[in-house]
Image (cartoon, rainbow, N blue to C red):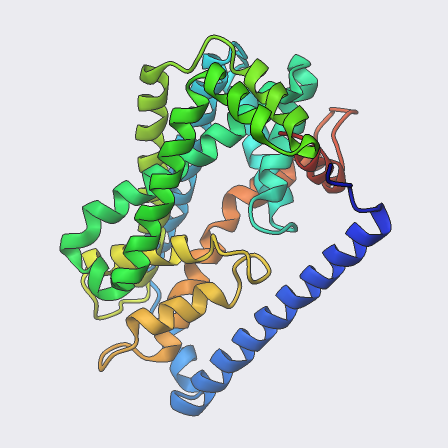
Length: 338
C-alpha cells in the first residue's frame, strides 16, 4: 500500500517545483531580451508597436472569446450527459471567473479547480463534476490533434517538425484510449481493481459517476466544440501577426499559433511565459521576421487572451455570491477530485 506524503513534505515539493518554474521562466525571458537587444535594438520594438493594426487586435480578442464560448458549450454538453444541467449563463460566468483565477495558478489548475468547485457546490456532485473535467481534457487533446492534422498542408510540419506533430498525435491517441475506457463504467471499475489501493478508491468513485455510459453523440458534439476552441486559440496568434503586419502568410501564422498553443501545455514555466515567446522565435525568425517581431507576436497573442480573464475578475469582484471561493480553495478542490 502506498503511503500519502505528509503535508509538510508535499508543501516543500510544491515550493521546489514553483521555484524551478520561476527559474526556467526568468532564464528564457532573459535570453530572449538579450537576443532582442543585441540583434534588433529597442528601436525595432518601438517601430513595430507603432505599426499595430487595431482591427486585428480586436479580432484576436474576439477569437479568445470564441474559444471561451466553444469551451463552455463543450463543458455544458458533457455535464448534461452526466445529468448535471445548469443554465448556460451560470456556466459562462463560472468559466470566465475560472480564467481569472487561472491567471495566477500553474497551467489550467485555477480554471479547472474553480469550475469543479462551482458545479460541485451547485449540484452536490463533486465527483461527477471532476469526471466531466477529466473527459473534457481528453476530448480537448483529440481536438488539438485534429487541428494539427488539418494544418499539416499549410506548413505545420515544417514549423513544428515530425517530432512535435508526432507528440501531439500521440497525446491524442492516449486520450482516445482514455475515452474508450471511460465510455464503459465496467471497464473503468475493472481498471480500478488493478490500481494501488491509494488510487483505487478514487477510480471506483469515478466508475460509479459514469454509470449509464457516455453518449457518443454528446462526445461527438464535445469534440466539435474542442476543435473549434483550439482553432480559435491558434487563430489569435495569427491575428496578432496580422496586427503587427508581419511579412508571413496568415496560414503559416495559424500553424505557428497552433504550435504555440501546444507548447504551453508543457508545465515547465509560470503560465507558459518564456516558452510561448521562445517557440515563436524558433518557428518564425527568418530573413523577414526578427526576434523582436516573433516575441511581440507571442506577447500580443497572450495579452489579448487576458480580456476574458479580466471580465471574469470583474464578475468575481462585484459578485453578490457570498460563497465565492478564494483561488486556493479552487486548487484544493481539483487536488481532491478524481
